[in-house]
Length: 245
Ligand SMILES: Nc1ncnc2c1ncn2[C@@H]1O[C@H](COP(=O)(O)OP(=O)(O)OP(=O)(O)O)[C@@H](O)[C@H]1O
Ligand SMILES: [Mg+2]
Image (cartoon, rainbow, N blue to C red):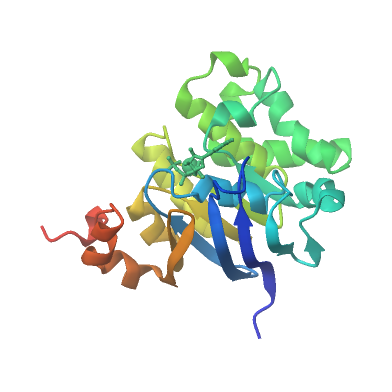
């Protein structure tokens, strides 16, 4: 039997007023080691869903559980040490002054020894090609460089669960390809939001389509992404790889 890492039951959520509900009665499970894609048009609730899973808005209705921990206020700090969250907006994620400080922050916060932090940071910098950026000021990096650092911050934590919101935004084709290889080599459980349906097709076996905060379908990625009619109904198009040439 597959061990569940994330369980979401009847999750509903509004940022402010109850009548303006953003997520409606969402339920799904994620097994340990699975890679799940979340797709949907702008404003469909994808980022909100990731933020709720990450414990950033614990005042939701329903249940969210990560491993054996309920996502409730008292558990949020502990949960956040176990998950790596790549924000859609890198500037909300990166808040320290240099790349080195950012890369060290997560593992230091997990209480790792100095030598282990150093080892993790070196390994991550090697994988992502960040060595030449380590002494740079975050504010002076290009968009793509910031994106690579945001991925690095998550990798140095070696988290149980990876939540990635548009992780390839601003990456050039070589870095996008490197990211795909890296993603495929990671054994962790991953939930990835993206408008890049080719990326989802290559990396996620299962995909959830959201529309107006509801789950429209939760199924095998290729079957879903081949269904032109269904995608069009929700303002999406076939990935390039599945378009007839
Ligand atoms: N902090 C907030 N306060 C109030 N409403 C918000 C807030 N953040 C997002 N929303 C609203 O919630 C809805 C869902 O937003 P969300 O960012 O989850 O969409 P998304 O699917 O990630 O869209 P995109 O593809 O554009 O990134 C939108 O209508 C948005 O305007
Ligand atoms: Mg979003």
